[in-house]
Length: 156
Image (tube, rainbow, N blue to C red; front, side):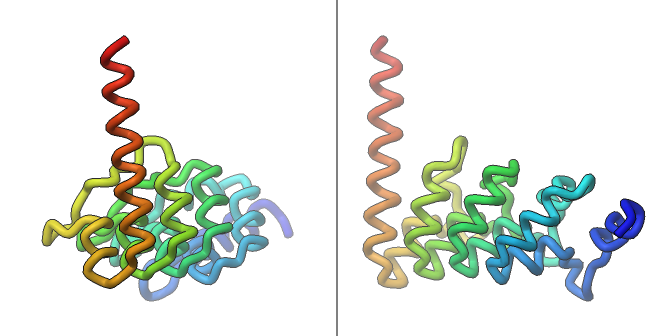
């Protein structure tokens, strides 16, 4: 496939404005995600959002695809991008009960753990309301760890 043909393939979107990276991420297709990201224009697709303002990372998180989430974060995906309802990848993974994805997202640099959606619900509150107690515990533990680290840093 020529570079021109490859670039054209990356530009294809569906009716929802999903790119090939959106489609592969939402299905947890790590080999396709790797192929797209290794192409000359692949990294540009990391930050594109569909009509619902969902990024590839958001869709991978919603689907519970831990390996794909790690792959996208390692490639530079923004962990704090939100959809049209103000929901982040951390929020949607918490909502869906995807503990392993939540654990990965919580370790991402600069993750906004306490950000809420348009209704003010946070990842911790939605996990608790949906009975995902292990996710709620993981989020609270990370919040406590970050707070302790901040206090320790300010005492130096």
